[in-house]
Length: 464
Image (cartoon, rainbow, N blue to C red; front, top):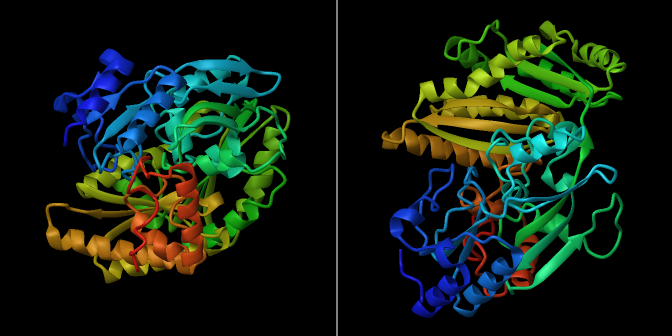
């Protein structure tokens, strides 16, 4: 960790007072995320308002000092790790819900608001904000927006980008921009909100967000369908996704995931080649008919069994297999590479089949599960980091996983983002002209490259 320029340090102390941290021990806590990558920043600032953020950016631009934005560090790709040092700006103190307008179905919030706290406040109005990543109770809205977080409900309600109406953000020039509007329709100028959301803090720092809210459904029903093989489950997914009432969640587990959930996670679940968890939310008077239609769509000649859950206790019992999976994975190996690739839904079965082939070829334990309705699969490569040969095989397997996804017309990430973990693969995912356009966009927002440097875009010399 290199110290700040004394002039910058003095200016930041004047601006932030005790909300400027420079002690290495204190800064260390802001230098890692859930990717397990780590780098210690030169300083950490804890702004309380947008004016402070704007002045911070202008000062850091003047001194050519990198800025890395941070929510709660739940990111899994290294996006919030300050690999070039500089200043981490943590939004934990900008955590106010500024306004909830039930009639407009809009909530205006600061970036440090926790997703879980927002949902609790909205529930009083019969509303919710759809993005529900696994980390929802303790991840921040700003972090959700930075990586375009989704979760199981994205299959019906969309991801973060689909549920934002407008933003206020500070660019790398230190300019405060307003994107979008708190209205349900807007066809005015360029849609900068959708550009900033998912940019992982490389274009601008979000200081306020106007969020699109939805009415909380009155009732919920769940189904668990077990299939002979992945192909049968994939065919059912295709049928489920053309129903008049779409599933609010449609989760997939491959045969290995089912086995681990049963044998190591203790879930009460029979042997199967694949599993689908299907959930529907609707008005009380319509939910049973919607559930029946989805159950009919889920039936094909590969179906082994289908179970219903009509109340909270039954739903908890059916979802236990999915919840048992993460602890089960940890019992297999101490290391896990977890990637969230996406392919067209029609090619989901082919992806799972090819993943099984890759697992055998590279002698690597591969477990796949995820959001089937979006074709968004979480591919887990299990290995022991202390075993160099095993780790090398896992990374070689991962290389082929990404190549396969691209070949199938898919994309590198559905909800985790790119960060450091997948940055080098961007050169294979996009052609030269497209990457050049992305770099020009980056320069327009951040001409000196101070915002989260080294993330998302690969080096121009990367010829992968």
